[in-house]
Amino acid sequence: MAALFQKYFQRNDSDADVDVTVVKDKNAQIGEEVYVDGVPVYQDASGAPIENVSPLGYHVGWAGILFLNISQMIGTGVFSTPGNILRALDSVGLSLMYWVFGFIIAAAALAVFLEYASMFPNRSGGQVPYLEQAYPRPVFLFPAMYAFFTVIFSFSSSNAVVLARYIYRAAGHTATDWENKGLAIASYSFLALICLISTRWSVKLQNLIAVTKVIILLFVVITGLVVLGGHTRVKDPHANFRNSFDGVTKNGNGIVNALVSINFAYEGYANAFNVVAEIKNPFPTLKKVAPISLIVVSILYILANVAYFAAVPAAEIRESGELTAALFFEAVFGSKQAKGLPALIAVSAAGNIMATIIGATRMIRECGRQGLLPYPHIWASTRPFGTPFAPVLLKWILTTIVILALPFGDAFNFVVDLRSYPDSIFLLLLVTGLYFVRYRRKKEGLPPAPFQAWHSALILSAHVCLFILIMPWYPPEEGGADVSFWYATYCAVGIALMVGCVLYYYVWIQLLPKVGHYTMRSETVFLDQDGSVTHRLRKIPNADLAEWDRTHDDAGG
Image (cartoon, rainbow, N blue to C red; front, side, top):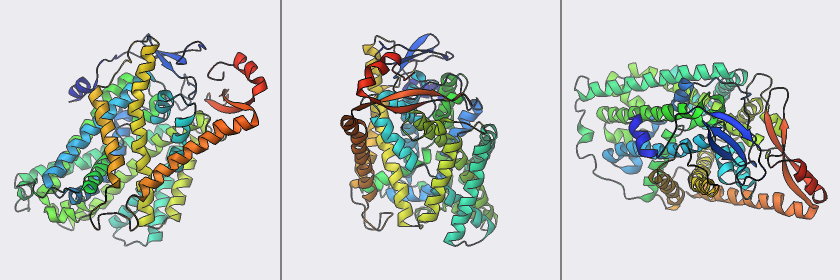
């Protein structure tokens, strides 16, 4: 399967080691030059500076790549979203097909990340460095927009609340809202503290949890096969598969909601790209292991859903909400034996939180190293524990604020929906940006990237993004919205925030420098304490600009 994936989505590649050599050349149009096994790979000098040695260490191997992706993909989605998807589509057959579609969509997007990683093999942060390299002009615009959304939406409140709810459910306690909030904050604080103290042990722990999650899903899959074989208390395990495509919905909003749920379930296929700089020989390892993680999860997802439909009537799954897996275990083993399920789902949620913290804090650190956040040396520093201290602390603070400030219900759902909308915009920019990078390389007379995604993968990813961006504006059926106010409010607010970013950029980079007679320039700063390298933005008076440009290269060194 992995070989078929690479054959379909890849046009050419190289298994070569990464030999990182940086060459400063003010005459080059593309910027800094990096060699991948002797093949020149150019990086725009306006982006975050290259760190030849990772100050965060090299604690991520093939197992880390595999389980970082798996752990973020397998959260609570596969245990709770099947009911939402069936309710949106009104068809058992189409619901199962959507899990296959989700794999294809994620595989196409993964090919996009692999091509970027082949060109920028020592850059952590995933989308952060890829956007800055794809769109170096207007300088700072797209990195600034992405930094804004990365910072303000860097909370994991929904995952923490789900974890708390399942812990209480496993304990048999009916918790109040404030009890849920308190346990959510305590649980998240404990997991964040582990990530703050040690990268090595946080990676090892999340790997262990990821293995546990795979075992849980394997148990569901094997149990489902036993159910289909007629060896359990389920009387008619094939009932849901007869005429399974009857009653397919024609509501566009329901179709896109199901697609969003599927994308959410597969979210995490590119989590390992956030820690590329912490992987020795990163691209060849990523190229082999990242597709395997996606294939493993997709097979488990599809077979787990087959198991659900084999054991539970479709009408019950449709109304199950987040309890689909609970209904499955009750149908097969009885209510008493199903009481242990919430504890297993709580473990899965904890692993998802840790994988998200590890990946997201690297994104925040890279935003800081671009020089676009105040006090960039603080965001880049790995003192005192060799971990991204400030990004972890930021995520903890924002997660705590959101949990405490927002009541469960409309406001909470709105914030979660709002965070997901810009993600599709940035992924669309990432896909189209590949063509700009290819054009600039061709213009410079450079060879193709060591790995190139097929055009079909890029086109598919772009169309899916456009579909997700456009279709939420289509009115849902009565009672189909997850908020009591206007169903597309989160779309309008997301777009308004992006427009606001553009206006802020214009004032910050264009208008104020003209009024103040200065020009913004990047300066490279080396932190002697831990070897980190970062940019900071300097306001250079126009009278001194010629001397600055004469004594500094394009990267500010």
